[in-house]
Amino acid sequence: MERSILAGVRAIGAACLVLLAPVTWGQTWEDVQLASCYCDMAQPDCCDSAGCCSSCCDGCLSDCGYCCSFPMCDELMCRLTPMMKQMADCGVIYAPGLTQFYQGVASGGVAQDFEYGGKVDQFLLLDAGKLGLWDGMTMTLHAETRFGDDVNQEAVVFAPVNTAMLYPKSGEHDTAITNLSFAQAISDDVQLTFGKTNFIDFLQLLYPQTGRGVDGFMNASLLLPVSMARVAPLSMMNVGALKMHGKQVQGLIVVYDTKNVATTSGLDDLFDNGANIFGYWRFFTERNGLPGSHGFGGIWSTGEFVAFDPTSFVIIPDEGLVATPQGGAYTLAYIYEQTLWMDCCNPKRNVAVLSQWGIADEATSPIGWSANISLQATGFNDARPHDRFGMGYFHTGISNDLKNLFSGVLPLQDVDGVEIFYSTAIAKGMHLTGDLQVIEPAVVGLDTAVVAGLRLSAGM
Image (cartoon, rainbow, N blue to C red; front, top):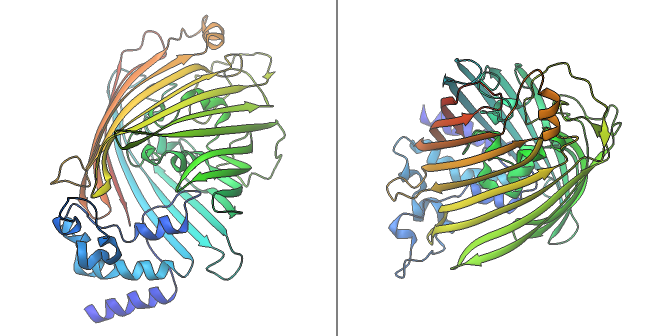
């Protein structure tokens, strides 16, 4: 029986398909390959006499015993790991993942309800050079399937409690390609990009710790400056350039359509309501030998909007109001990150802070300004090197223009909230997360919402 299984595995290897951890838009091929050989460097064998990192990842399985960290990992999976790295050399990577949620409003909010739902994420990454087609070109495809229900509407408006379930279309069972993007390296540190881009994938490229809502925080207000909601579609048609600093993005200039095209081709009526122009630059710092950065960005739009127009990341009450659209929407953002502690034997074990601030044009945006701060820790316990913990606070300042428009029908106030989660590794590539959110609603008169949930994520 075992021989037949291994024969099947070798057949798959011949087809050059590899299952790895999910990839993100703009990742280098070397980054993805290393993901298939991530060793548990908390093992004593992996450190030299000074306690610093050795080159044990060159022989990941034999030197570090990656699977030894997971008692539930069977022998077959251990044998597959080096084969996966070899298959990646063929130029094709396929990375699936499944995330399930059971989340509900325990008290307060719009309505008390618990719902089950989930997401299937499928990534396909092609390296045109390794396929013998075009040197320096990579393609990233991200297909998403949404099933079940969520409580984004039942909890609070202006602060979606489950970002992942906004994709591909909130409230609907659907499958769509939310990312089909291409990157062409023109030098060691400059890439040209174009295509259809998933905004959360794009954000994770800049700040990997944000986690896309399937890992880390679930509330959109802690994943991005929600003051960007007016000019941040779930998925967008774009063209631009990235300036790299090693493996991190240092700067970018991107021009993209104002419409959300998560469930469409994006080619119909392209730029019919103007364009958004996004500029960003990051200054890298070091404090006590630990990395950090200060990022400054701005988005200006030529489109026309009103403050209560629907957005991708903010749920706005529908009260049938009428107003004259205005042009020139903008948002400015500042993002600070700093690592507070890092294991010298494994940089993935760390404690870091992230804070995001933003302001927007109140005449065209439902949010005038926003701020958040969060602390996340991964592998802070030697006995649980893959567990993750996070806690964060956010404030969302509702646009004064929107408050005035709604004053006669639905009084609004600013939103404050906190979220805390603990994610435990229960098997290789599988995490169970407990999540608790407490949010002061935007609608005056509603009680404070207490939202509790479980998230089970699995991916290779």
